Image (cartoon, rainbow over all chains, first blue to last red; front, top):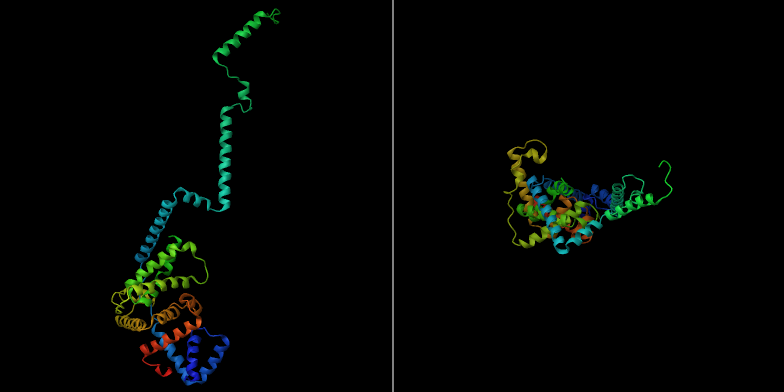
Length: 167
Length: 176
């Protein structure tokens, strides 16, 4: 049968680890002050703790760390490659559309602006006057049409009895 | 250096030393540390902060150390000859200036005694002891890592202390 002090032993460990409820801790502290056995137990536990108060036995070298970072980069590349092999271009498209909504909207707006600018530029190139009537004001005739039009003008002048003023 | 590189820089020492305390094998500890960080890298997208990151890292290390221990089922004798700890200048280790060969020898003996004593503890007690005393994790965090109630953590820790008390101080038997 354990004595009350032996039963308290577990609580001493918890108390030294700061894991005891405040009320129980205060009660235990009062007991330890007046109990030589428990005082000895606390002193022993503190002495024991000094035994592992040692610097870390292994040193972390930069070579070790670089090895891990390199391996992680290779691992990421392999993972990406496996994804592409498994799903092809759809994975890449999926990755693109996994970006935030704002980013996608901004991209769509940018594409729209670029298309509009391209259309406007094309219009300016085909209408250097900037009037918007360039194509209407200059009819495009074939050589035969042009000649017949010119001939028609001459005929109309010759057929006209009333000569214009100055003739 | 990317975020992962910074993380490795910050926690590598802790991980290799925890693995060493749990396995008693420096070479194995370095392998475990590498596996631990690669596992972390693979699971980075799934990581959700549910407590201290140290506890999460300790849990991965502990599981890997257990697996490694099972694979190398034959317990290797504790030898510290391969530890770079004793080949480095004391100043680098303690930050308190150069140490004498006598002091380094004393440290070596203390380390050897501790590691030998730890090797004699049952695996569950050793894990709880190392996580509590050396990694300074709370009982709650250890309970999550070891998947057991906090009361079990407290009793395992207590039993580990009593055994270490016997092994390291050669006293304390009167308390049992």
